[in-house]
Length: 115
Image (tube, rainbow, N blue to C red; front, top):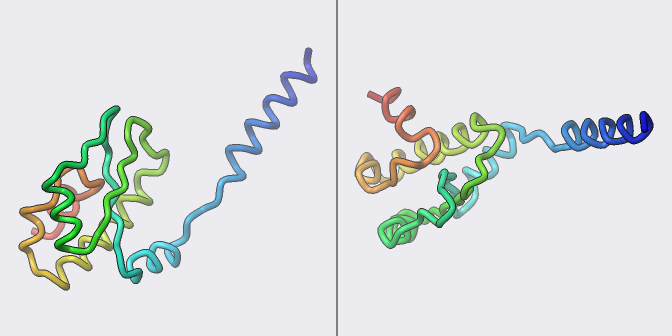
């Protein structure tokens, strides 16, 4: 019985620490890519609307909806989104800010910091 518990704990430990860490370099590669990704928190049903699809086509971005399973490392995705927001501002000015969905991870915080 003790061996089963130890084996389970070792397996859980291995799964937890075997996940790759994303570096700032990987985030920069994403920002330099032709199509940018904006991460959003959805729900059970997809939260991407027709307006979001029009936005993504207009500004050459794509949405990644986490659905009802939130990511464990919010900061990583908020930083990636912040870089995409900076890129959108550099290329399109502030016009895009009125068209983006507010559920984009870190958007409201980023907007507050920019004011």
